[in-house]
Structure formats: C-alpha cells, structure tokens
Length: 218
Image (cartoon, rainbow, N blue to C red; front, top):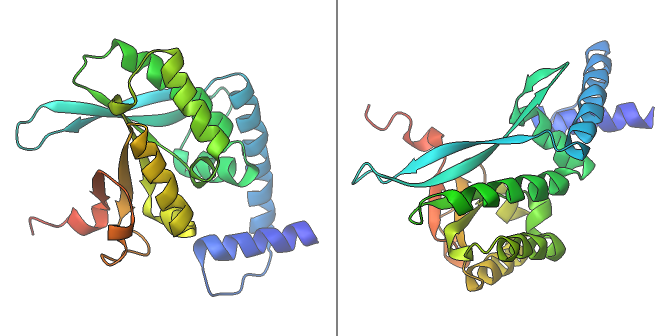
C-alpha cells in the first residue's frame, strides 16, 4: 500500500504538480515496467554496456566545430534502445546515476585524449554528482590518470539542479572553475529562470532552453 501511494505521489509531482492522483491499474503496469527497466539498468551499468554519442558544438560565427557534447545512450538486448528521458530519472531515483557518470566520463576522457587539441568535451552532471565532493574528486582523478587538462572539459549543470541548493552548487562550480574546468548552465529558461540570480552562479556558458529560441525566426 505504501509503495503504491508513494508511486502515485511521485507521478503527481512529475506530471501533474498540485493535483491529486488515485493509484490505478495503469499505474500498476507502469510500476512493472519501471521495475523491469530498473533491474535491466542495474545490470547494464555493472556490465558497462552504456555508450556515448557525441554531438558537435559549432561556433556560429565561423561554422567550425569547437567541441563535442557527450550524450549517454543505452541499448538493451530485450528492451532495445531506451531513451535517456526514461532511464536517467530512474538512475537518479535509485542512486546509480553516479556509477553511470563515472563509467561514461572515463569513456569520454579516453576519446578526448585522441581528439585534436582545439576541441573540448562537454559532459552532463546530475544533481547527485554536483553535491557529492567524492564524485567530483574521482572525475578529476580520471583526468590526471589519462593526462588530460581540465581546461578541455566543460561540465553541464541544469538550471533545475542549480536551484536545488543554490549556495552549495555555486560553491561547487567555483571550485571546479578554480581547478580549470569550464561550467555551462544548461536548460536555462525551462524552470525557475530569473536573470536576477544568474550573477550569483559561476559559469562560462549559458545554454538557453530551446523553448525560447525555436520560433526565433518567426
């Protein structure tokens, strides 16, 4: 009963904030699906089956590629391609997102080492990563291990993550910058956006949410 109530609460917070949800057969099916996903995800992380795709970051003035953003991808033998929109929330809720971060970051750093020197890597951090000094220390250790400069790495942190604990996240980003990393504030405009607070945050790049720019030409 408590599990079902908790699931209904989670669904309300995720999809219908401020409303009431009554647990139904549909939710029972969702629980089974999420349990199956969670089990498969745990196994895939243990077996290091997750991979990275790289999206080019282009300088609009010159048209040249200046960096690449690492995107987590998961293909499961039975479930097929599972969207990050599905597996990242589960990874965050269960706490295995840090294991995913550490595994994929090392993959990305190994790749970065072979890239031309002018390209940088952009890598997403979850709220669990940002508030965990041990995880951040392990990420820096990986760079040292592979002899890659921190200046070639940009960490992307979403606006929503920043707002969970503005003071702590600001302190963390300043620390990362002091170590040589670049910081990008991601999805700006998707949640609590306020121009009044961004001066409190330490970041190098502001990534505006697509909702603000998709109809720019019109």
